[in-house]
Structures are given as C-alpha cells and as structure tokens.
Length: 302
Image 1 (cartoon, rainbow, N blue to C red):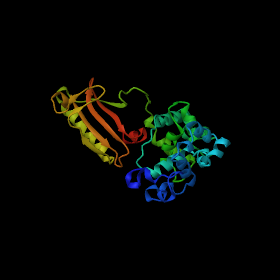
Image 2 (cartoon, one colour):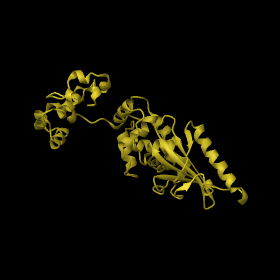
Image 3 (cartoon, helix red, strand yellow):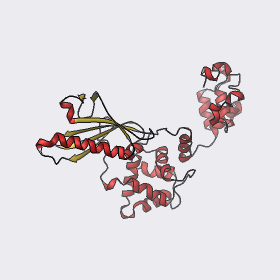
Image 4 (cartoon, rainbow, N blue to C red):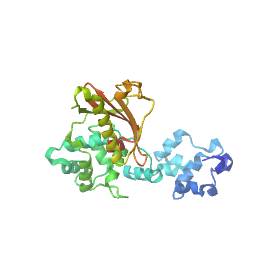
C-alpha cells in the first residue's frame, strides 16, 4: 500500500493513514468497515511505543478488556468470526480467481455418502445436519472423521458451487446434487499413491504389437480432445518432460515418442495441470499433476 503511487510512507500520521488516503478507489473494499480501518491504523502508528505487541494482539482477539481499553482501535479483532461460507464468499468476491487448498474434501464426501448404503445422500444429509439445513461447519465435522485434512473452509469452497448466492446453509436437494456430482462412478477411492502430487489412470491396450506407437498417439489425441471439448486450453509441451515414472525424457527423441506431455488450463485460469501420456507394463497411462489450483477444480477437469 505504500507504493510511491499512493504517496509512500510519507502519508502516515501519528495515528496511521488519513481518511483521505483510505478514500482512494483502490481501497474501496475497506470503505464499509471503519473498525477494520481503525485496527490497521493502530498497527501503522508512527511511534512504535503506541503500537500493540503480538501478545496484546492475541489478547485483543480473546476480548481482553484491559487491552481493548488501551487500544480501542483493536475492537475489530474481538468481533465474531465469519462463518466458513461467508468467509469463502468474501474471498471470492474480492479475488474471483483465488485458488483455495481443498485437500481430500471431494473424496471424503463420496466415502461419507457411500457409508450410508442404500440410504445414500438423504441419510448422509440427515446425519450431518441433524435434520435441518446443513452448514459447512457441520458437514466438515462429519467429513473430517474420515479424513483429518478436511477443513470447514475447504468444505465451504465445495458447497458454494451448489448453493444460491448469499445462502449460508444447504438444502437436501442441493446436497443430493453435490453428492451426485462426486460419486466417482462408485469406483474405489485410493489415497496417497501418486508421486510428486500426481494422479494416474490406466487403460488396457488392445493394439497388436506392430501398432503400439500408433495406438499411443491416437490415445493421446483422444485425451487432448476430451480436455478441449470441456473448454480447457491444451498446449503441447516442448523440451524435456518429467513424470514420476519417466525422468527427463526428451519429447523430440526416438525414446521420447513414447511420452506425450502437455499443459491443460481451465478456461478461467483457476487451475492448470501437467498431463503426461505414456505406456507402462502394457497399459496406456494418463498421469496428471496439478501445477496450480485446488483439487476441486483439478477433479472437475479430470
């Protein structure tokens, strides 16, 4: 914020940044929160002796009356925390292309619903919501029993895709739609088998021994077409490609003809994958490694 364009450090006063500085269009996101501006100004005071210490900041978060009396500007820290869905929605509103880490949440959802057998999504919804509408915190608590990596924020990031804008609780019908989207065809879900954060998919080879190269080329083209049909951009990688099975294989060499590598980018730039296609032990392999983006976008692409 103290770039010369905004006036540099010289704009600071004894009590932080002046109101005229806060009123600049670039800081419009702070216009509706006077308490947040006061908290930031408290940290930006010119005199270090008038700034709170980290210990005092922690005490202010806990609502310590003595600290809040000494630093009234820290009232914002003592306020209630946002609900997970509210927090994620606010982040998305300010940064539409923001990528949140969502480790294991979709796999945990699929396994949670499967655990109810014939009761399926409806039984899972009732168990996690207690019979009412479902919050992100309640669903996260249920999913975390099967995977401790699941958080309320990652669960909210998944749920928001199936909810109305501004809604903070999920209905049964919305939960059913979300569960249906992540059934994975009923296939077994296996964790932590990839190297270098990769996912592998194996397909049976049906070509005769003298047509293996042609089959692999055709298979790679089919994979590329599947990604482009889903409105992702695909770019063939040049130079050296690296997979967890083939290391440093030049794409343009005779040996490299058995490895096709390209990057796949989601249309709105939320996620990018590095995809390697090769043959291993008689099977056709698609290896995907996420370069950026959340696992939710990654699995949507795959």
